[in-house]
Amino acid sequence: MMPIMNANADPLEIQKFSELAHRWWDPTSEFRPLHDINPLRLEWINARAPLAGRKVIDIGCGGGILSESMARKGGDVTGIDLSQRALKVADLHSLESGVQVRYKLIAAEDMAAEEAGQYDVVTCMEMLEHVPDPASIVRAATALVKPGGHVFFSTLNRNPKSYLFAVIGAEYVLRMLPKGTHDYEKFITPAELSQYIRSAGLQVDSLKGLGYNPLTKLYSLNNDTSVNYMVACTRPV
Ligand code: SAH
Image 1 (cartoon, rainbow, N blue to C red):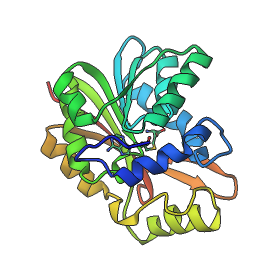
Image 2 (image 1 turned 120 degrees about the vertical axis):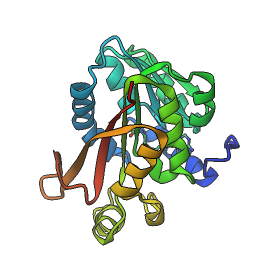
Image 3 (image 1 turned 135 degrees about the vertical axis):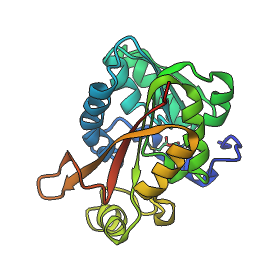
């Protein structure tokens, strides 16, 4: 399938996710980490921005793990992505589960032009480290949210420890992820992401780390942002 062309998308990245898409909802597949972290991130988001009755957009939603869970909390959720196959999987899963989400194949920048200022909550998780120009996605997320609304990002930090854990550990030692899942050079430090966020006109409210214990295979929310981390922001009124 031809990936759709967009200036701020890496066709190889989109293809990689498309090829794995049929296994998206298998909690033992390559997507296991997303299943495992989902309850943590969902509760964190919902505690800061209660989702019930809110208009939510999930940028880079993939097969819809986070999108559907936010809809279960009562959010009116739109999920966007550039992988047609991932969106197909997301649509089918939503039919099966009966949890309604609107999925759309569109770039974040184009969606921002179409529906500026319409969302109470914007999420963009585990996606920025896969795009050529993450700052442009941050600007699109900012354009989509209403003044006073909330924006959440998560990504991978860039340092020797994150290289060891996210690339060597997860892809080579634990084999949790296929080799080549992550490109170290595209990882983003909290300082860089905070800079994109502030330049876009958002305010950073909270930074949290996601810790993984390979022995217990459990994740926890903490203040160690050295590998996986999440940022909560608001758009000033
Ligand atoms: N946010 C989801 C999925 C993360 S996987 C979750 O955390 O559960 C990364 C997703 O980003 C994939 O679905 C991939 O297709 C998507 N993606 C990568 N580059 C993109 C781009 N430029 N625009 C939109 N989506 C993109």
